[in-house]
Length: 387
Ligand SMILES: *Cc1c(COP(=O)(O)O)cnc(C)c1O
Image 1: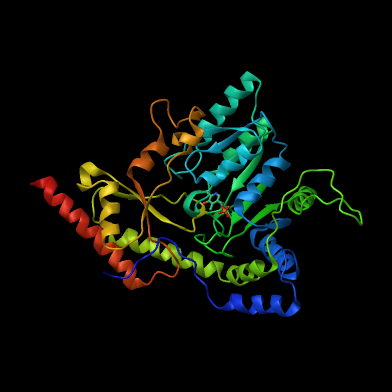
Image 2: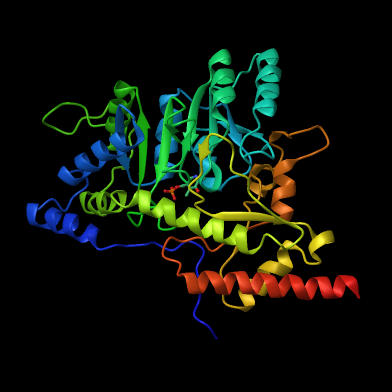
C-alpha cells in the first residue's frame, strides 16, 4: 500500500517555533497575551481591516458577528447553502432560523439574483432577515459587489464567512473585508492553521470591542467578578496565536503553492472529457484552498462516487463537494432559494463535484500519483462506456 495522501493537512514551517518560544519565555501561557495582540495587528494589516479579534474558532467568530448584528430568538438569517455546517450552526445558537440561498455557476458561491429574490419576498412579508452570511467557498470570493449593494439596500448586516478564503482577493480587496464583518478559521485543514482558532475582522472597532467583551465572559469593570450580560469563553490562547503568526508570514507562499497544484491538475487533466474545474471569477484571486471539479458521468464514463472510490482504493483522500445545507436533516423544512425555479446549482455540484488533495505540502510526486489515478479510473470508465 502506498503512503496516504491527505486532502489538506497542516503545513508547519518551523518559524512558528520562534514565536511559541517567545510566548514560553514571556510566561504568557494563557488566553490573551502579547502574541495574541501581535497576531490581531498582523491579521488586520494583512486583510486591510481596521481591527481584528482573535478567537477560539471560526464558528465562535460567526456567533459573535451574528450577535453584533442584533440577531436573536425568532429572527431570520440568510445563509449560503453550499457550505460546511459551521456557517449556519451559530444561527441556531441564537434561536434564529436560516434561509438558504443557492450558488451561481460562475463562482459556486451565493447567487446575487437568488439573494435579491429572497430579500424582496421577505421584505414583502415584513420579516426581513437581520443578517446574511455569505460563504467564500474553497478559496474563492463570492461576487461581493452586487451582494453588498443588495444588503445595503435592504439594511441587512453582511457577514462574510471567509474561513476558506484567507489570502483571496476580490477586485483588489481582501476576501473577508467586503461585509460589515468577516471571519477566518485557523482549523487544522485551512490554508494556515493554529491547530484551532479563528478571527473576526471589521472596520467597526467599537463592535469588535463589544465582541471582545462577550468573548471573555462579559466581565464588567469591577474589582470583583460582576456580570450584566451573557458572555462566552471564546478567546484564542497566546500559544496558538504564536503559531498563527509564524503561519501568517508564509501565507503568500501557501497561496502560490495551492494555485500551482490546481494549475497542474487543470493542465494535466485538460485532455480528459467530462471534467470541469471550479472556475476562477474574473478580477479575483482564488487561493484554490481546495482544487474542486465536477465530473459528467455521461461523457467521462464514471461518476463522482466511482472516482472517489478509486482514489480511496489508492490511499488518496478526496471528498465530495459540501452537501448543501437545505438538504441536511438538521435543516429540513427550511426555506431555500434555488438559482432558477427548476434548477439548483448547489444540488448539481453536490452530485457531481469532488475536492482533490490540495495541501501546500503536497509533493510533485504525490500530485502525479493523484493525476495518474484519475486518468486510469476514467480510461477504464470510458472503455466500459465504449464497449
Ligand atoms: C472551517 C469552516 C468554518 C468553521 O471554522 P472553525 O474554525 O472550524 O470553527 C466555517 N465555515 C466554513 C466555510 C469552513 O470551511
